[in-house]
Length: 192
Length: 249
Image (tube, rainbow over all chains, first blue to last red; front, side, top):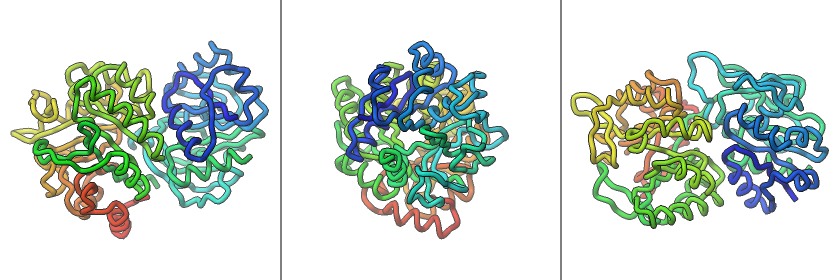
C-alpha cells in the first residue's frame, strides 16, 4: 500500500489521481500506524510552510516522517519541509536534508511557474529521464544546491530540483502534473 | 529555461464546451472530457475550465466534471466561473483542480483573494480580469456585461498585493475577433506586477502567439475556439513557435 500523508496542504488528490493512472492504489491518511506500515510514503503539498509545519507537529507527524525507513517521496512544499530551515515564515523544518530553503530574489517573476528543464539530473528517480525534458514547477522558495542534490534546475539561479538521501527522495517540481516525464519519475519511485 | 505556456480554455455550460464571440453568441464545441484529454495528449501546458453557468444545480454538475477531468489529465488544471466563497474553492480543489480563477467575486469582495491565498497559497489564486478599452482599459465583471470604475492596471496591482499568484487578462475588444492579442494592455499589466500574466482574447493565427511572446512579457497565451475547431492544432503551434526561437516545451 502507498500512503499519501494527509495534512493542510492542497492538491493531494492530484497525487492520488496520478498514482491511479499508473495502476497503483493509495490511501490519503494521517494515521501514524497506516503511514508506518505503508510500502511507500508520499509527502505532497502546496501551501505555506509555517502553518504546514505547525499542523504536522500538532498531529505528531513530524517525528513520524523523520523515523520512516521505507522509500519516502516529498513533493514541492514536501521537499522544502524535509529540509533544515525555510525563510518562509522563518520555519524550522524536519531536517532530513541539511539544505536551507530561501526565497527567489530580484525583479524576475515570482513564483517560478511553468515548465522548465534540468541543468543536470542523476539518481534513481531520473532513470530514463532526459535532462532536456521539461517538468512543471510552481514555487517561490527553493532549496539551495548541496551534497544531496540529485537534480538542478536554473531559474534566476541554480536550485535543487530534486534531493535524495538514504530512503528519502524529494522533487521541487510536480511529477503528478508533469505529463509523461512526470509519470516516468513517479514510476521510478514506485519501483524502488 | 522556463518555457512559455500554451493554455486551451474550455468554457463550460451545462456540462458542454461552448464558445462565444465578444462574450455573446454561444455555440457548442464538444465534450469537455474528450477535449481535455486531447489537449493534454497534444502537449497543452495547462488547462483552464471556465464555468459560464451559475445556478446551484449546475454547479454540482461542474464539481463532478472537474473530478472526472482531474482523474484523466496529467497537466495543471485551473477552474473558474461563479466562485464566490472559500467554501466553493475548497470543493473545487478537493475535486482535483490545482488552481481557481476568480473574477467578479474578487471585484465585489477583494478580501476573497487573500482568504484563498492564505488557505491554499498564492499559486492557487488566478485573478481573471476582463478588460475593455473605452477611453482607458477598464475592468468589466459579470461575464463582461457590467462595467466598473476600476482601471485594469491598478486592479491587477491590488490583486497581486492581496495575494493573487497569476493574472489572466482577457481583452473583450479582441476576444473572438481572431485579430491578435491586445499587446499594449498585456505589457502594461506585465510592467505593473511581478507575477505571471496569461494573455487571452484575440488569438487567430500562429503568429499572434509569436507577437505575444516577442513583444510582451506574458508567460502564457490562452485561447479557445482556434483549438476546439482544430484551426490551429496545438502541436503545430508549438512547433512553429520553436522555429521562431520562443522557448516552448
